[in-house]
Amino acid sequence: QVQLVESGGGWVQTGGSLKLSCAASVKFFSISTMGWYRQGPGKQRELVASITRDGSTNYVDSVKGRFIISRDNAKNTVSLQMNSLKPEDTAVYYCNQNRRLSGTSFLNYWGQGTQVTVSS
Image (tube, rainbow, N blue to C red; front, side, top):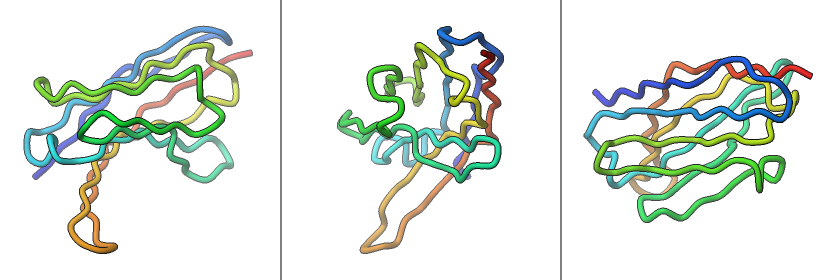
């Protein structure tokens, strides 16, 4: 069974920084797209950032220029460096591992979630 373990959440003041880390089990890591999702209070879950097996990255517009996603295949980890944090970044952040099987069939694994709170 694939397991994802997150760390790095916490409280920070506006303008501060946090780094989230996700450690994954070996199976499928090297061939999967990794991502960070978040769900703020009263909001729908959204994809914040993703990174492919080859290192190609994508970010939601609201975090571009502030967040950086990276992966270390040797250590089976994916990280999200969050800078210039804003109160609207407050959310539960989830690590995700996604592998396309065929067509629209995907295999997904999720972390337990970690709370990030940004005070104004």
